[in-house]
Structures are given as C-alpha cells and as structure tokens.
Image (cartoon, one colour):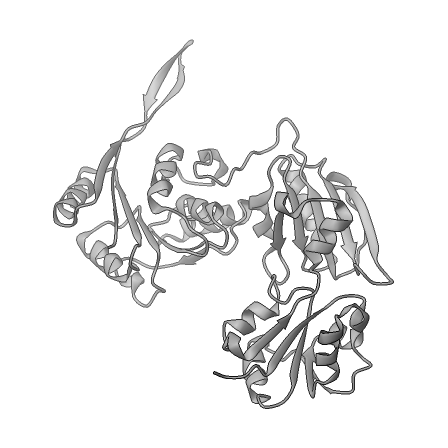
Length: 400
C-alpha cells in the first residue's frame, strides 16, 4: 500500500492561526505548497517553495505527480472536499496517497452567520460554472447558500429572482468570513444595488409573490414554460415519461429527437448533477432547446446536431434513453447496445407507423407497452368541453 505523500489543507481567512496544531505542523514542514495567490498570502510565513495554480487548471494533476516523493501541501479554501479542488484531485490520484485536512466550509460559516439549519437549505456553487443553474432551485420559502463566481454574481441572481416573481426575496452577501475584514451586505432582490467583493458567499431566502412562477423539480412543468413550435412532449405525457426514465444523481440521458428540449431539461432539473445530451437535426429546434435550458436552470444541456442512428456513434454511454423522434429499428438497436446495465429506455409514438415499430420491438424485447390518452377542458363557445390530445403509445424497459 502506498504511503500518503500529498496533504490537501483547508484554510480560512484566519490563516495559519485557524489550523489545528497538527495541521499547522504539516504546512510548516512542507517542501512545496501549491495554491492560489490568496492561499499563499494566508500562509506567507512558511518558507516552502511556492507553486501557483497551473494554467490550464487541468495540468494540476501532472504538476502534483511530478512532486511525488517530496512533502507536498495543496492549500484550498475551507473544506477541500466540498465544491473544492480536493474532489478533483481525489478522482485522479489514489485517495490512499492523500490526507485531507478540512476547515470550516463557507457554507458552515454562512449558515452560522444567518442562523440557518444546514439540514433545511440547499448548498450550491456557481463558481466557475453557469450562473443560470441556480434557477432550478428558486422555489417558495427555499433557503439557498451559493458560492458565487464574482462580484457581479449577486446582481445576476437578483435579476433571476425578480423576473420569476421572487423580487421580495432577502439576499445577504458574506465576504472574508472568519477574518479581520469580514463584511456583510443585506438587501432585497428587486432593488439590489450593493457593490460587493469578488470572493463571496450569497445567502438567499426565497419569497414568492402571489403571481410568482412555480417551477417544481418534479417532472411535469406546464407546456407554456417552454418555447416550442408546438411539436413537443406534452406536460402529462412528459411526467409519465420521466417517471419511467427515473432521473438519478449524476446520470446521463440521451434525448433522441429532443425538439425544444422539454424531456432533457426536466430530467436535469429532477436530480442533482443529472446530465443530458439532446440529439436534434433541426437548428431552429436546437435554438429553442438552448433558450429553454437557460431559462429553466439547466445551462449544461449538451445539444448535438445529427441524425440517428449515425449521431449516436462515439457518445458517452447513457444511463437512460428517450426516443421522442427518429424512431426506427436501427435507432433502437444502436441505442440499446450503448445503454448501460440497468439503463432505462422509453420511446413514445404518435403515428401509426411509429406505433407499428414499437409493437414489433415489444414483441421481441418485452417491456411495458401503454397507451396514454389526455383530454384538457377548454371553452366550447359559452361552455366547456373536453379537447383530446393526440394519444401516445409508450414503450419502456430496463436493460438487465
């Protein structure tokens, strides 16, 4: 078994004074210290060789491995394994070679400053990531702690809140927590005007107006939340489709014939870090899907121009597949071959020709075949009547 040679140390605004004696001894004994300018400043009394974060940052692992055999310390902010560099390193270097030294995280400090129970809030990061991804968490009475990208991020989030009817939400920016220069800025989303430090943590208490947009993370958003040309998986069918696809943390969906992106977007909203690749040959529909993804908090939806089954070649193996367009025996066979064990496949058909394909596939592979019929109440002159949507034949199965 390899002995640990790499120490990843969390450090706060109080610098070396905030470390335990044992952790401080590790830093003081280091031959090489790697970190950002801020981390080096917090530990400037230590006379070790100083190394800045490499550029590009992906070169970090090779840089670290080149120092193996020396006493190496990586300095990170707070808890190195909570939205920090420690997780990235731990995926590439055997954890048996690493010792982690956590400090209080920004989330824990912010929770204490706000008097909020961490069990009752959401912790998010938009640091170095699209800010729009926090939109999916805007819900009545939700409490959010957000690691931000920079000084401009709180104003961006204030705009997102206001546009969705949450303008009365209370916002607090906390900077330099635990240090001599700690600062706090309080305000309301709809009139947020503070100039804040670039390195900060944002606390949001979401307060909904009576007409606020309600965007639950369970599947089945209203159809009018999506820009579309009318060709889309409708709300009720979409909810049934997602239940069979079973969104899970970090899982990857292929949305074949994704159109305006409604299924892929709801998949990503339904589970933390869920990912999706939308395959769509029409550029106008890809544009709509991209706009919907930004508006609904899934900016990382990956949209691919291509026709199936050829477009499926070389893609990362998925955990689930939805075939909403381009259905054929050849497309199914290519998708099924790529699907991971325990993967879920769902195919919807509205035409007789597509339904015939599903009947053929069901006869060969089994699974569950259902007919979904939905009617919505709509005005009929001065009265109200049922207007049926096109019935959908749905085939679903799990790869065993």
